[in-house]
Length: 218
Image (tube, rainbow, N blue to C red; front, side, top):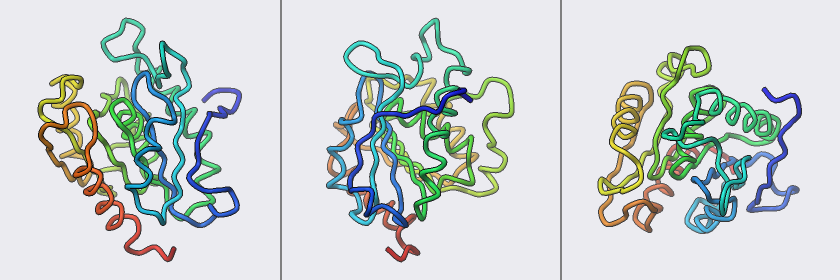
């Protein structure tokens, strides 16, 4: 883990005085985007949840990235690990103030969300993955997929088969991982390509309501 605590730029859906005890939903944006991108989804998410959108740590081009693209020469699993460790070092103390912690990631943000779930399976209630993928582990020990499988964590994975961005090898790996290690709800959409749509967000709202809020007294 980094010697200094990471203090990311974030946007909250409600003031600090109104957050304690609420279920937390962390939004994780995609490659070359920023923390403002996914906050547009907030009106379509359960109002009972406190939402925080987090900016990735590395400035690149017009936006930010969590780690290099997997096809880039400077990509490494160590870079993924460093990003996840920094995110968790920031999130862990915040999580203690909330009744649950869920993650919603778009594109590369889904890779971050699933990686954090695999790193801290007992701490994360659920993951919403939109038009994204999961990252293969290199070496052993950072991901605890054995524990994750025991816990049978619910994961929502929405995508379009015609998505022009996420390559087939990533889809195949993610499908194999999800069907083996989590309780996955996989939904395919048409004419959505590499984005989200109203139908998908309706399904996400229903999923979060069922998984997170059904037993919550908020």
